Length: 125
Image (cartoon, helix red, strand yellow):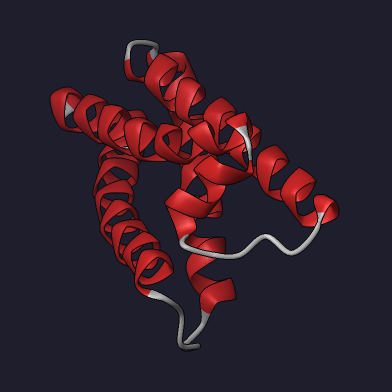
């Protein structure tokens, strides 16, 4: 049970670290999402988003070895991942963004398993 929770935290942490390279500039963001960044304001917002993903990724990796962090880390990851999926809805997006949505669906499934195990361990054992 603990191993599964740890592995999910590491995997989802790494998934959230991948877009953090976007903080390095617009070219990285274009490569990640295959989108045109129309103005400096959008670039700023997307780079800030990349920083936040980096922070969440680091928190998830830290929580993998700190059981006292795992509950809030799992909750933050579920909220982040599920909110993106919900915001995406059923719109048509380019292949890069569809790939992000697919990976988020897989991450959300793994987070559901890890969260259930965490709750079981915390409240029923």
